[in-house]
Every structure is written in structure tokens, then in C-alpha cells.
Length: 68
Image 1 (cartoon, rainbow, N blue to C red):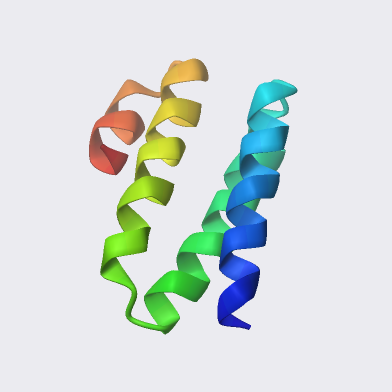
Image 2: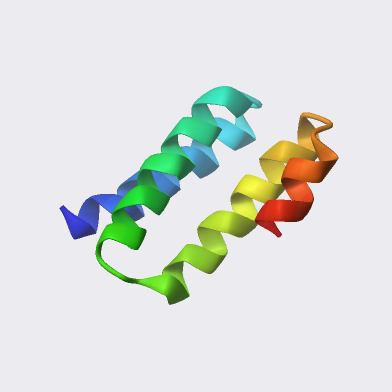
């Protein structure tokens, strides 16, 4: 299950590049949930960063700030 987190993160990047921001958000959230479950705080940082970018693209600046 832990290795799925990386795949979800990469799928989030693909969706983000396609400007499918809600799908990107779902993929990043799945990646984040797994990373948290396994206690991988270090890897969470990059996923939170990507989630911040998505929120910023959607004009959700407070959400972006929380993620960054």
C-alpha cells in the first residue's frame, strides 16, 4: 500500500498538468492519506506543496496558504 502513495502523487501531477484540478486534488489527498498512515512526514511536504499549487490555481488562497 505504501508504494501506492508515489503513484497517486504522480497521477496528481498528470491531472494538474491537464488542468484537471479536482482530480489532481483527489489524487494528492489519497497520496497524503497513505503517507500520513505510514508516518512519512518527510514525503508529505512535497504533496502538501502540490496541493498548495492546485489551491492557488483555483483561487483558493487561504487553502493554498494552509497547504504551503
